[in-house]
Amino acid sequence: MQQIQHIFFDLDHTLWDFEKNSDLTFQKIFEINKVEVDLGAFLEVYRPLNKKYWKLYREEKVTKSELRYDRLKNAFDTINFTISDDIIDLLAIQYIEYLADFNHLFDGTIEVLEYLKDKYQLHIITNGFEEIQSKKMKNSKIYHYFDKVITSESVGVKKPNPRVFNYALELAKAPKEHSIMIGDNLEADVQGAIDVGMKAIHCNFEHQEINTNGLLSIKSLLEIKQYL
Image (tube, rainbow, N blue to C red; front, side, top):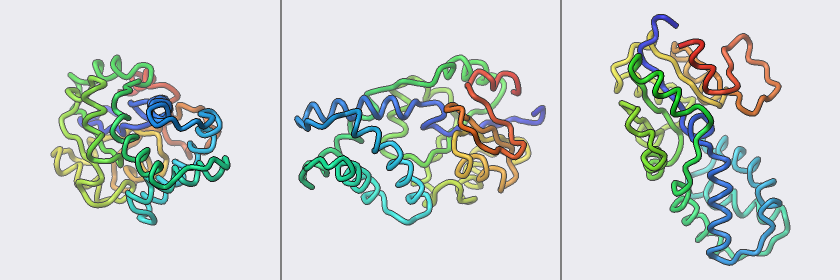
């Protein structure tokens, strides 16, 4: 780790508490539109469906618009809640509009960024939608910590495609051997970075039983201070 000069973070599920902010967004837009669904029952099926559709999106098997609609339609269908396509379309739009209104960060985010900012160049590589990622960072008051913010939409492909990482390294003028990726997704963040010659740290905040094959894995952001 002594050679590291550039740190690339994922955003959602790594610094920005996506699940908590997403849950609060659904609560808000359901109230606005008087969608009288059991929020807990909806979220229980929506969360794994959302992960499934994001994987399909990364693999170019669904489009952005399909992801935004289908994850909602599938969740409502699963819990047998009747709702019109027009309302689903409206919810999909409002979800993106309101998501950045909630800005819970994972414990230790600010402390870790303060600790790292004077020692390293900090950057973001995210598969999240272009129109909302910067807004999330600005509203949660972490945008100023980062030199470069790279979205997959700006590159035209998604992590773990090596083009995303190579583009980010080139934009940041960061040699791969002096760079590290920190993120929650073993496939998109960790393996994607390793495949282009970067180091990586896996964020296992849910304490899942997974085989990391000797990869460095942390269960809280504050553990980063032990290594960097």
